[in-house]
Image (cartoon, rainbow, N blue to C red):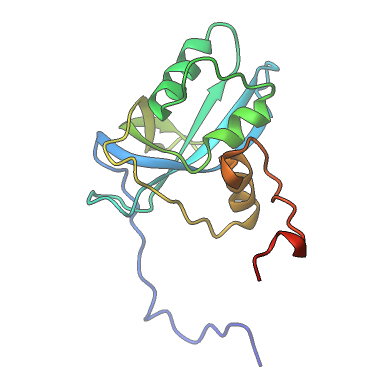
Length: 178
């Protein structure tokens, strides 16, 4: 049995992914990566997804956004965390801890369109996130098809009995009422 046979192209649909119209969109961070720019500046790159549980254009569209981690950009990162609803006093001990914490949390993003020149000299347009604000729809549960992202989200939610641990409580047979 073959995997794919190219017998006709009659069923091919041309995909015309035009950028989203500029405006405010409800999004959440589905994934993140950590890297360094050519200058050595560390950054966290998030893949934001336009929420499908809110009535809006562009559902499930993805927009990539980088947060650079320098003294000069600390205010930008803090503005994002404020929009996520992170209370003051929270400390992130690493770039990874910051990135993991932000996964799956709803936020509103101001998305604009920028023109850029690709490697072949062609001018193209892409969506960019300019600002963040608190979500208008805080009741949200993201469902990721990426198991590692789902595990990371569960880890940062710390939901076991209101404790500050990601480990399930230990329960023996003696603890059970039956």
